Length: 450
Image (cartoon, rainbow, N blue to C red; front, side, top):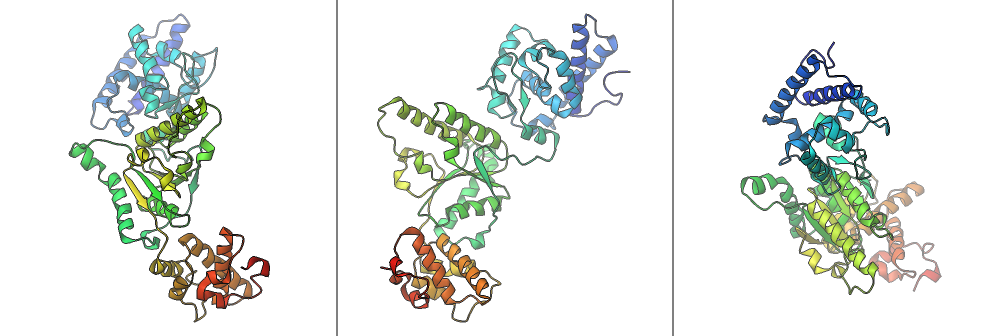
């Protein structure tokens, strides 16, 4: 009975059948036996079928970023991916590597399995090293370099190639934002909303501009959202991700930056390697901490800090997917950085009209309200940001629920007072404007009032 099933494998299955036959041939050779003629004939048939599949218009490898790779790269990928696509091939790899039994192939085993000559071994090493094409395109990964380093397929790439449902993998250093939002909930000046729509054009029309019109291919797109806290920067990122129907991941730069030299770059590399080739949006908060105006290099740590920023920007620009950077202090960011972004959007504090709309949207829509609750009056009375209004609207609802009543102006006044008190140790009743007349005396203790 032949090693491969009697039914001829179709498409990508021919790749795994060929690798399995190669492994059996090598096992026989290791045992001092010649491969059987039937096995050799089978290998020749499979090689011919693999060549036809790779040359066809429906080449399954083209689901991945493999354009322009040499034929040796496809042989390497087939060997690396085979242990995930057909688990029994992983067992064969373990038999072929008795000194270091593992289901993943190594460059040393690739050398033997593919019967490479000296010039091809040099090409193999160039393809699988850390800066080689296969790792740079996020197709394979390994914890080390060298002849006996285990080469593993990137799981997301395997899922794409095999049309398997991809398990959600959170990029290291990020958190999945579960909230979803639509354009109707976004309260911004019309020109800023227009800029957000234009940002999406860089994704929706990339094929037309780059592939059909010959425009220069760039990564990203990358946007900088700047403005005071609570003005809707993160919410706008949520709206964009919802529109694209992609997940949003918020990156905590503090989790990426390390005091140990070289570790920051490794952490950044892991983040983008995990995000590569996936439909997702990355949001980087408070980038002013890392992209502030570069000062004079006075010691070695300053030089490495500049290198870390340069590496982060290089990975952001190379990443084929939207990146959104947010800051509360745009003036602290080096102008050399902002010129590399496709869009810079300033988020202003909401004006009176915007505040009225925010109160209307953010007060729970099915909550009972007293007749005297007037969102236009609230907008005129106190100058809160969108984030403050969101918190105050919910806090007022909880106060009303606890009282067993409808939401009234006293609840809203109390909630607004709490929001103002977050930013300063002492608050004046006058800070609430005309809303102060509804503030219960029990809420503001004398030591907190100026």
